[in-house]
Length: 196
Image (cartoon, rainbow, N blue to C red; front, side, top):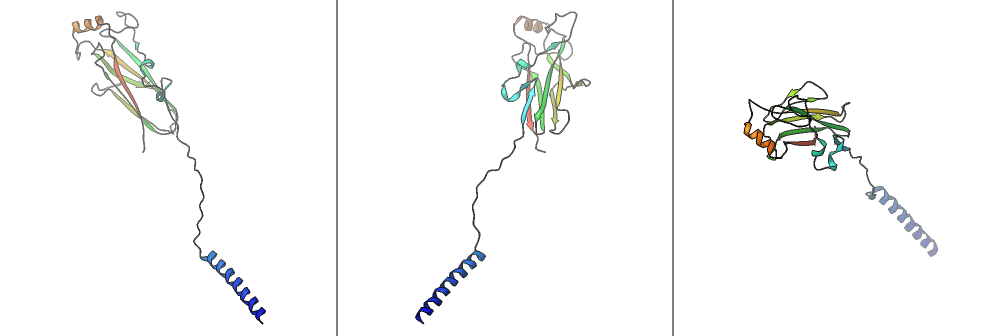
């Protein structure tokens, strides 16, 4: 009888352990920890200006070359009072996967021997010439990541003004030629991702 009692007690104890295990698995709060990585594809940002990646250079001076409009009274390849010309800025955004705003500001610089060198207008992708307001000389537009044409060719026209609106007199013009300094314009290009 003692033996039966011990067996019953052992079976009851085993049943109790099984019952507790089942109850704890049924009502337990599951806790499990896993670790992993999530990969995000980063949008490309490779803006080329005149075939140069803007992130690889600090200055674009060597990439912007003026072209002088022929004038029978002025030697080819130089500028003088009354002469005109242009330079091109080509923006290639084919490797940019976000929309962005480009802003080009052009103005005179104190380093220039010619203070009467002015921007007169610009054309975009061979459009008609768009006049610029001298106070701002600002060209701005947005290139959207999903637009079909993401190559923008800007032709910016300049002139050494003579007559109305000039700030230099004839003696200043002569001194500019004798100074040995170049005529210069300061060109600031900025590219800013748009968020909307």
